[in-house]
Length: 540
Ligand SMILES: NC(=O)c1ccc[n+]([C@@H]2O[C@H](COP(=O)([O-])OP(=O)(O)OC[C@H]3O[C@@H](n4cnc5c(N)ncnc54)[C@H](O)[C@@H]3O)[C@@H](O)[C@H]2O)c1
Image 1: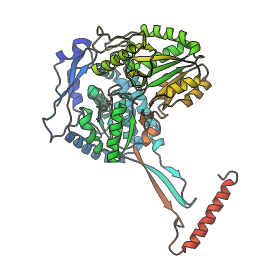
Image 2: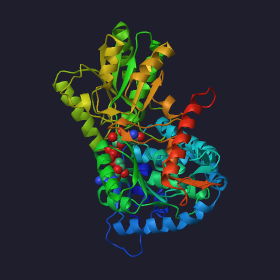
Image 3: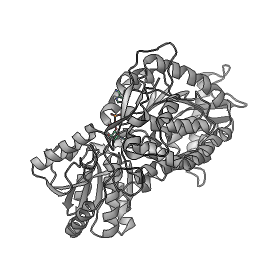
């Protein structure tokens, strides 16, 4: 199906010289896309670009409604046998996947860099995250999913148990910014819980997602269990959600609302992992070096195209001048560049659209009085979508970047006097995804963190402490999302809780031969006795 281009014309051959990726790889990965036999022809392939050069890289098929139905059908068939396997047996696939991800990292990194234009160091964070998440769930799924005893209606006589059953078919819609880990890492707990998965990756990064799926199949996942359809979101979202029992969406808040409406109509559950306008609070007792380096990573990781990156930096008055001077100097020294090698601290933006948003936000802010302390320019000399890491001072309400997510390498820095003021300003946002607090006093940091309206808060780390704590829930408050990934929450959401209660000796409800009045008297007495007993020490 895929319209692969001649090797000589591909961007990676012409410019980047990957030893791992060639045109044949795109053709092989395309075999992982579900295309229904009954719907030939109608789909124009969609070209994908290599952001480092702006050249065409390959093309992906535009799947149709029929393809979605076919993929869903095959995945559901595969799910029945998969759900019958023990959790330990399922887990072995993900332990093998962990090893494969580490072994094939050079291939994964090359392909990911080619599709996204990100720096290799940032791409490696994905490899690490995918491996860690797979291993975490492979080792903890049995604990999360085990049958639990619950308090029965009549103590000692009602044996109530909570079972966890797979939902069936989970649809996942994933974005381009972390295309390897976000395609696979939400699928891992869904699959471990006994579900099939139907994935629609972003069209810009479909091949990276397909590589993750291919590695899972190589690790032993049944071929149709994790199906992929490719193409634009708009026509595929509806059939995808109509054919699924649950949907996990990661992307913008705007599209997230649309997905929630579709899930509401289909009456299925959903998780929405959406945007952020994340704040970092640097308190006056912060370790200056650590805060400068840490917030720098927090602002410019993945060129700021990271949902949990810092876009608002609040610095306390006592440290403000020193911090800002050092921070801006360090930002000016950052190494930008392309190429499939470690070295550059920041790569390219992914597309002309991303570049346009960044230029618009900076232009609007500067036009309304913000000052550029570092960066502030596109860098076409490095590649068509490069933009310098940028620090602005003097952002205020009325500027586009004040409230809206830029999703690029731009941070606004401002001074605060009291912690109360900083907390109020940080919380003054419709978003609530991630935040960080920088201080030498961990207790103080913790207390401030508890007052911030964000799903994850890091003390003396920008985002990685909370994100990499895979056992702890991760997700957004307010318009940053619904539901959580990671930890128990990240796997139980893909299950139906089923209560099975076995009644022994006496019935819970009134037996037919006992008059209603007598039953009411006995039960009233029983509740009074229970209440009295609960007041006794040790019997609560
Ligand atoms: N909270 C998180 O964990 C997290 C992680 C990564 C990215 N994000 C957010 O994602 C956004 C960046 O990604 P984006 O701009 O590509 O997001 P987007 O919402 O435009 O696209 C995300 C995915 O949704 C699909 N899509 C688009 N329109 C659709 C529709 N009508 N129906 C069904 N699917 C549709 C796209 O094809 C893509 O696969 C940012 O806002 C970022 O903060 C959030």
